[in-house]
Length: 160
Image (cartoon, rainbow, N blue to C red; front, side, top):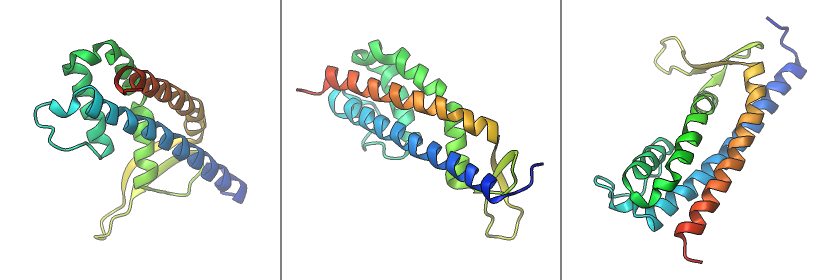
């Protein structure tokens, strides 16, 4: 295991910061996609959907149901499925980083949920510095793809 230095810690903070900021852009685009699907493509008519899905996991589930069930969205279904598949690992990392606390060790990075009841802190997610660094390209690519996806749906379903 690497020696914990100020430079090493700052590097981790920078990687996590970039990751979270870029992931926020993805979620902004997907919230817009959700709004378009809800308002413009008939998503609010899906059975069991009385309220706009606000929670991230609920939005993603809603989008999957919508692209599967609504005929007007069929031309966009494969693109959504591809984005959804490519988001699996970044979603796991985002969840661990946002809802956990880094254990402070370099190399293998472990994020744990703080246990307030005295039990051991449960691991949420583990990654490596290398994987977190590689996520820059993956997540930046998803930022561009989700923005283009939102624009395509906007053009098709939002009156100009």
